Every structure is written in structure tokens, then in C-alpha cells.
Length: 245
Length: 259
Image (cartoon, rainbow over all chains, first blue to last red):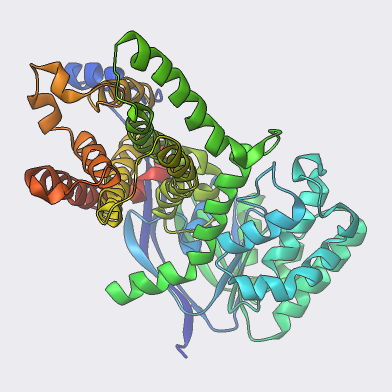
């Protein structure tokens, strides 16, 4: 097993923010002929370098728009970075946007299979875990109802229950500890804590510094897409507190 | 490299199956007759076409409904398959923005689920053959070749269209017009021999060639007796897949910035 669970090498992510959205061929041709095809280049991440060791729990700190979510999406493989590369070792479970891929016309049961497939599980695995998922999400009575009739809390409970069925090597959390009501929140925190115990690597984004201090042993700090501090949680937290004053 | 590709495909085979299932299930959900519509719809439109083109235009051929049905079934798979593939990226934008999944799964599943529906609707053709006395011959199994070419042509076309429509949404409307043009040059409800001039149009239309080959197999003729009509669509369908794959691969990382 490699020593590093995640290696982020020189990662840069550029977005072209066109002033107006051009998605018609006619407009594109006219603008191109007139030479008005301008983009505002925007680097959401620039020269980001860091390594995460196996078993480290890293908090990602930064103000709004610092590039935290973009960084997580690059690491999760949703975005392909414009520059540099990300190397990952082991099974990665992103608890980023729970229930991506739910179809509202599908019933809860059908969505369990669909979303599991999106996450790359095998059919046999889902067959085995089906009852656990339903039980954990507390949706026994509603599992054959189309999820367009679910409340948002029910949907996120289902998403959480499905996403946490596997034993991850790398866990990515984007403020998902606040799923559902107080009772379910306690349960989901307990579930995540149980995943922490085994030698799992964690990336955690939160605006609550207390929560990050409680859960993480290391941290990185982003500002305007650049990495400005990395290392022990208390040192980085001190820099962050200085910034937010 | 190739091994990695195959491993990824294996991992997401379950997703492919789920998406195909979803396409079929949701297409007929909340309709009373459900999946029966795959049979009823070509049956009814063939009745209308036979009525119009069989009586008014004086086609006395008794098996004319079979002629129409073969053309219509193959054309409508091409049309719905390419359209579904073209829209598949935008349709799954929510998923693409949030989780990593190899993106070719989306157009591929769209073409596949339309192919399953098409395969079911071939039952109507078997029924029509029985009713109108078109007897199967030893050439019937050769019908599989045009079906394979049709699948490849639709998949290739679908991948090209899905890539382009991410950047230019107008294509969805343009393609509807193009499809109409393709339909009229496929000889679905008339016979090419009666047309006289403009024969060249049919010689460059791969979909017409595929329909022609398929009809020959159904009517018990040897399609290889005129090899040009087999080679042209075969080359075109393989080419369309190659172009489609190259285009899709080149641009897929930019999809997320445009949807």
C-alpha cells in the first residue's frame, strides 16, 4: 500500500466565464466573425500542491469562493483539472451531493439500485445490503412510493444510507453531517464516526472551525484558489482565525 | 490502457443496465397499455401509411404493408435512438456535475434502450409476415447484418450529435429537420424504382441501404448479389462509430463546463 492516499500535484482549474451564455450556433458564428468571442478566464484553483498520508483526517478551510468545493470535486474525479494531476489510492466515497442521480419518478426501491449503480456498486452487493439501507434510512413504509412524493429530509436520508454502505479508504465530506432531523443527525454522525475508526483517510469541508478541530488532525487553507497554509490543524486554524478577524 | 478501460466498463455495467431499464420503464410509465405501445404504435402508423400510399398511390402489391413496416421500424429506431443519445448528456447533467461516471455510458444507454424497444417491436413484423404471406427463407438470418449496421450507425451518429449538442443546443431543432429529410430519402412508403430520376440520393444514404438490405433478407433475396449496397453502409456505420468515439473522447472533459 502506498504511503500517500491522495497526491495533488500542481492542480489548476480554469473556468471560462463567458459574459453571456452562448449556446446557439448562429450567435456563435456571428460573434466569431465579429471577433467578439471573449471569455473571462477565472482560475478557481491555481498551483495547488499537497499530499495526504494514509489515515490522516484533513480539514479544508477557506472563505466562501476560495475553491474548497472545486478542490473536492477535482479529487473526486468530477472535474478534470486544467493543469496538474491528482493521484488516489484506494476506494473513494464522496459524500458530496447526496442523491445525485435520483430519478423523481422512480420509487425509493428503484432509486436504491439506480444510485448504487451510479456509485459503482455491484448488483450482488446491493441485493445483500438492500434491507440495511431501507432500515437505516427509516423508510420501510415508503420504499415503494415514487420519491417525488418524498420530503427533502427523506431523500437525503436515503442518499446518506446508500452512500455509507461501503467501507471506504478515502472519505470526502462536504458538510453533510447535517442531514435530516436531530435524531437522524445523531445517527449519521455515529455512522461517520464508526467509519473513522478504521484506518480511513478523510477530507472534510466545513465552515464550523470547532467541528473541524474536533474531527481532523491536519488542515489546509485555501484563499482565492491558492494554497496558503498546510499542516497541523492547530497551526492552520490559527492562520484561518487571523484571516477571519 | 485498454485493460483499464475494460475494467471501468465492467464496474459500470450495472449502471448501464440500470439506465437502460430506466429508459424503458419511464417511457411507458403511467400509460394504460404500457409496453404494448411498442407493438401498437408501428401497427397503427403502418395502417395509416398503407391506407394513404397503398390505395391512393395505387400500389397493388399485396405485401406492401410489410414493405412499409420494415422501413418504418428501422427508420424510427434510428430517429429515436439518435435523438435520445443527443439529449442524454443534458438530461443527465445533474449526475455529471456531481459524481464521476464514464460519460459514454449516457449516449450508449440511450441507444441501447431504444434498441430493446425496437427489438420488441419486431414482433409486429413477424405478425405482418404471417398475415400477408411473406414466407421466411434461408436468407432470413442475414437480416442480422443490417441490424448490426443500423445499431452502429445510430450509436456513432448519436455520439457525434451528443458531443455537438452540448456546445450548440440549436442542434436539437436542426436534427429534427435533418431527420425529416432522411425519412423522405429512405423510401419507407414508396418504391425507388418508380421514382425514375434522382437515384443518386439513395446511393449515398446509408440508412436507405440498410433498410434495403433488411427488406431483401425478409423477402427472401440475397443482399450480397449487389455487394455495393452492403459495403457502403458497413463502411459508413463503422466510420460513424470511429468519428463519434474520437469526437466524444476529445471533448468529454469540457462537457461539465457547458451544461
